[in-house]
Image (tube, rainbow, N blue to C red):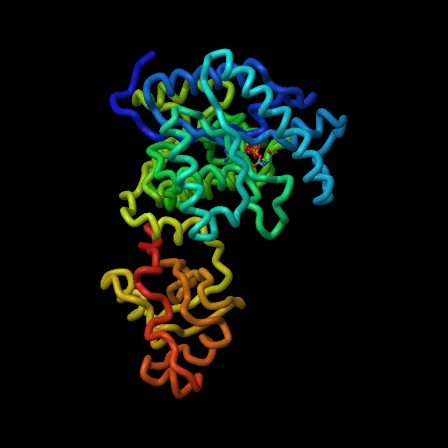
Length: 378
Ligand SMILES: Nc1ncnc2c1ncn2[C@@H]1O[C@H](COP(=O)(O)OP(=O)(O)O)[C@@H](O)[C@H]1O
Ligand SMILES: N[C@@H](CCC(=O)OP(=O)(O)O)C(=O)O
């Protein structure tokens, strides 16, 4: 097997559709064993490896004899609690056979939203990988409430890859790559091998279903959202077949397998990566052309004068999307005013703000240190 020159940080996500056998939902043991062998080999080559594994819900359902995903939150949480333990037991048995230590990391959205918890999560991953351990990550489905969920592990894996500053994100699924339409329903769909810019997919009018397989979540739509997050964070991404985890080594060695997504230049400011990816925006500010130019080309802070419209309800220090006149997102940032205040001061010069609000506020609506530009906004 070809080896890759320098040790890299690799995040590998495997979906339920690859971990389980179609109709019965039983574990796909040979796939899991091959995945364990591949990841252990990559560790032996000194790569830092993080596995994001779905499957808690699917495994829990089979254990409890359920034939479809539960609908109520309480039931989902109970089923995931059953499945997660069983899944980790299988991983631990197989990795232990190869003397590869593993650790379980269960995350909720708030672990990555709050800056201090984000930094703490980063330190945990760094310590684990420095010790040569493979962290196995899943959403903490048992406690996560609906509003605070990542919702799917494609997004979670991209956020973890961004958090640790990974070189590669591999999404292992039950199709060998992205197609122009869902190959299950469109026999004539053609394969997409390489994506240099995500906009290319819009131009090609790619149709991605948001329905996954029986136990999967999000289908291809969430994989493209993962691609948006990962490539913007400067991470290469590949979608490839879960039944052949050894493809990871071939892709690292330069083979054109699966669908590969080229990264944007890596933003070298970790705080801005956090703002761009981990915070969930709760409102939108529409900017005039001058303000868009000032923040994009001039690297300036956003002032109230350049805001034409405010939507959503948000508090000070919340994240918002900054959009041009066409509604195209150009940046994300943390606001110094809440939505009520911004309705009053939009379009005002900074020196008019104290008079309008009746108190002294910040000079900027979004300071440039709290503003992360969207790389594909051109
Ligand atoms: N354009 C597309 N190209 C490839 N697969 C697609 C596309 N649109 C939808 N899909 C579906 O997405 C499914 C994979 O998503 P999902 O079941 O959520 O996988 P996982 O469990 O690996 O996350 C495929 O089985 C396929 O039917
Ligand atoms: N956290 C859930 C996984 C949700 C999910 O995204 O599933 P999948 O689409 O199979 O990757 C579980 O463990 O069942």
